Length: 96
Image (cartoon, rainbow, N blue to C red; front, top):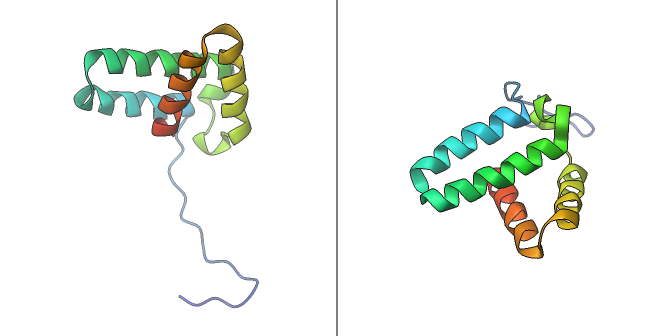
């Protein structure tokens, strides 16, 4: 459908989904695809991320910002090794 300059097409919105529920559903799908150790590692990474987010984890997934992920990375890096930090980022990239 053509639009005139300055007009936008109607946006189709996804149903409301919390960050916590999205991560939970993603992890459930990985149960079928990953080895048990990989699943446990992903679960740990997501638990850390959700704990970092606090009450924001129960907010709309659309409200999640890149800065939230970057701040979470910094939070993990101050408490864990570079290997753990990088693994957490890998899991978050796959999940989000």
